[in-house]
Image 1 (cartoon, rainbow, N blue to C red):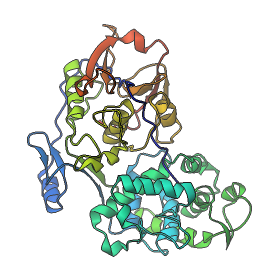
Image 2 (image 1 turned 90 degrees about the vertical axis):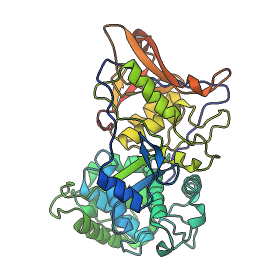
Image 3 (image 1 turned 120 degrees about the vertical axis):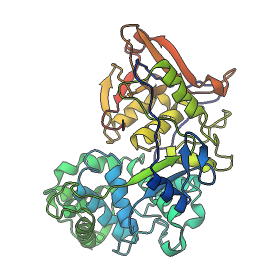
Image 4 (image 1 turned 180 degrees about the vertical axis):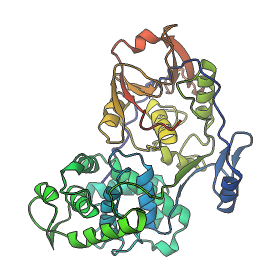
Length: 433
């Protein structure tokens, strides 16, 4: 499955990012514990120190996926991804992993993100055709292309983690919509068990038809073409094995006992969000932190860190970060752990609401930390001052006579943002405060 490619706005076009601001206490500073600092130092993990700048050997973003094997890393990725009806259901996660074990692990936990079959299928979910091309492009953006066909034993832990993150992000946000369809059909299986979701994932996402195995779950079978599939029996067996090994609760389909630990450590990141919104001064500081992120472009040393937020090269701008879509991608990934490609600014809210990632339709009413779109722009609501009829807009973009310093927080009339010109996606289920 491929991720929908972000279509950034054309040359000389200005994207606006909205930040609505209230009057609340000063934002807190995130402090790393001594245990975290020791761990980062031992593993050469980069981190942002607000008192000392970039530490750990350079600029970068490292995704730390806990797990003794790739299957457990995949488990923890899904358990922490915030995907509604998936991240909170151990049986669903197990059903997915059961398929990946068959596709790329030889029915073991050693799922290989770099595997390429003799028929030209790529990665953990054996993407073919256009999906393979999109997965290859994602690997290229993450500087992983040289690792295709590698054995796990020959790849560093850092690159394995990166490959798992890139692959699963591509899988869950792909523009063919199969994963979103899978999520929408979860309630159609017979029972809330790993075997049932394994069948469903095989039918809707893997679509490995032409085999010698029957789809046993009647709900999944109704959604199939009625024929036999490749390895459905092994996938079901693997799903149960994964559930028994990682869920910590073999008797139910909930996430009770799931070990979930996915962390992103940012060099150049900002302070914490403030519950309820920010003051104007806080918003300016927030925007300044975004402007300070280094590097700003893919072509600079270390520029591949922008792949974490799925920010593409913007050739018409002095910086790849000077784009409203890029800023929303940064915001929802950094503060909500929802890292995904997005379309043009005017389409962002609709895309988020249909993504199955927990965004709520807010209609035309702004709320702190909601994402907005109008006909061509997108942004984030950080607060509302109804008494003064004022909002704070954080704008990111590029164009004629616009420099990078224009990416900042500005004050505008609130009534302009409640007139029906803007549609909002609430992030109540997404943002971590």
